[in-house]
Length: 223
Image 1 (tube, rainbow, N blue to C red):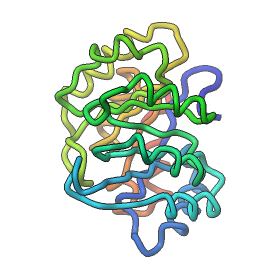
Image 2 (cartoon, rainbow, N blue to C red; image 1 turned 90 degrees about the vertical axis):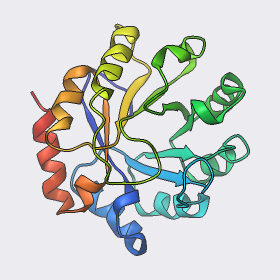
Image 3 (cartoon, helix red, strand yellow; image 1 turned 180 degrees about the vertical axis):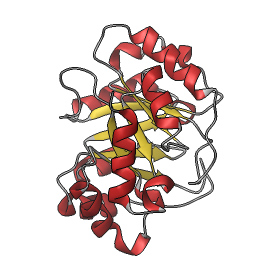
């Protein structure tokens, strides 16, 4: 389950850092190693410089793993694309505040498709801009690097941003607070202490033995 019971920090390996020729095997590896979700970065070459995965990749991954699929749309015009990714098997679809004109309409559409709706914020975008869609948001993705490339250093001010989002949420169960960028053994416990619910880790997980790296992260965020 994506949202259930007491707050437990969930781990979401990002396939952006996996071997592009072995994505299904990477998904099965991290599932066996205890990952909670699979994070899939979709890039269009416009909103960010890179071009990555399309709906057909998500559909293939849906066949390869039972993990919930967390699809992060780093694209300039996400509205025409969300249905294709939901049809392909996405459990969470996250769009960027910076890329959507009618955000409340798109969030409502994603939720109407029986999918969790997420909103991502770039480092320079404050959480307070979500005041009018906060109650409709299932998933808040705080970028702790500028989106577009894996392996970037962690942006320390993201800790304050996570804390503000956590304080604003109060005792409510949602939105779940996810963090993407520079997550490792050092930053993971700091983010968990600040209130993060989901940690997205790409380079850290796939630049070594994924089973060992996920175990290290799990230990780092477990009281």
